[in-house]
Length: 200
Ligand SMILES: Nc1nc2c(c(=O)[nH]1)N[C@H]1C(S)=C(S)[C@@H](COP(=O)(O)O)O[C@H]1N2
Ligand SMILES: [Mo]
Image (cartoon, rainbow, N blue to C red):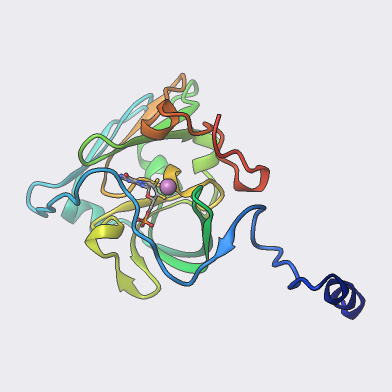
């Protein structure tokens, strides 16, 4: 509203973008952040495994994975280090789609994402069942680059970005939560950017 703008004008501030959580700055760049080195991808030996508290465990070859139904979703990235990258169009397989295949058991409450190497991060199953959660391989009309997680990364837009594993290799359905790589090192296990749940 013009009156609000006038008011903001008086205080000398830019109008606040309602899509940006507290303490975040918008960037149009796409910083690269990870521990360790970028893994080599071999489509012949790569598999995606879903295991643990499920009725039917699943191991997909790369070819099997590419045959799954795809979807697109627009969402924002919020990194705990303070940058936000807004309005990204991700393409991939929705997390829900995979859950339809494995059927989580009734006691399944959490999911551990296991990346290539030893990066892990966990989240409640309910958080990953949001329709905007994808196992993504494309961003804004182009294949993901190796440093951003090619061939497959998780995207959980409603949580800080460390909860989105790059180079995903398996999903473990769990009845009790375990801490992932950063959660063990003092990051907040809830990770809601709107509540600034950065560190514990
Ligand atoms: N496999 C793996 N995934 C990871 C990480 C990592 O170190 N290894 N870092 C996380 C963190 S802390 C962030 S902020 C984002 C960064 O993703 P980007 O490099 O595509 O911006 O990836 C997340 N996923
Ligand atoms: Mo991060």
